[in-house]
Image 1: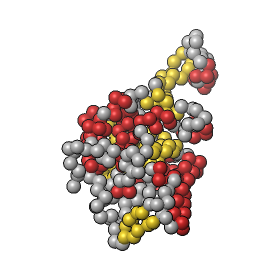
Image 2: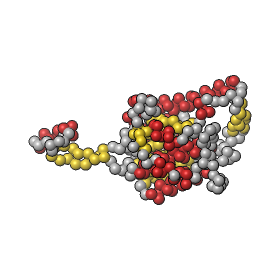
Image 3: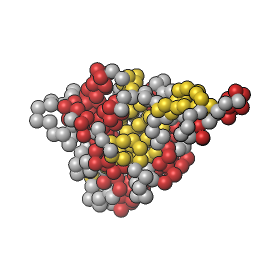
Image 4: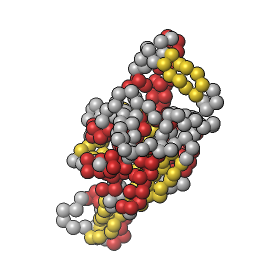
Length: 311
């Protein structure tokens, strides 16, 4: 059952009103990298985010002042008169946003739940992309349900999408039983492939729990003809695991207690977190996606502003 929205703690849950409030704040954000040396998108990976493309508009006679690089030499040779190819910036680009709202995202140690950071990131991306005049769609998923939205330019479609993001977030409850088998990232990716074409922007917001070789193959397929941005949502605990943490974990049938005061338990858990993070980051090289880290311990929009250009 969804949580009551009266006296809602916005660090734990994101209602539609909270997500809608990010629309005006996201207007200055660009999805082009800042090109700074310390940017998470700097260097060779910055070129992965293409921005809007160019579409052929017309072929016409050469005019004084035209860039000679736009001359179509074949047509020029055939007609005996210089001709140039004119391109126009594409005004309509499609974007898909995948938002993880599984129970593993319902965790936070300082500021937000990871699920809240993911919801806010989805709102920032969706509203900014829509403001550019592009179509927005996506896939929202939790441990038992996947909801897909075809990309659309209709305001009511965007509002429906954001309401669903909020609904999925408000339905999170740590007391819910874990399903068996657990929902992996592959099922939502399979649903997304039905909406994917070419030259789209695909943004996946998750902690990337339960990934495998099939996950990498799905992402490689998408990245072959699209801009794919992975927003890796984490918590400070993932990077520096405390020595006095007691966790109750379950696979849906059995439950056990993990106590990080035991040195071997602490080491194995820290290695697991580090290995997953490094694996996701290495996908930048192996399959050509862009990876940015989002901490649930920091303001979501500020982190986007640090990674991307602000107009």
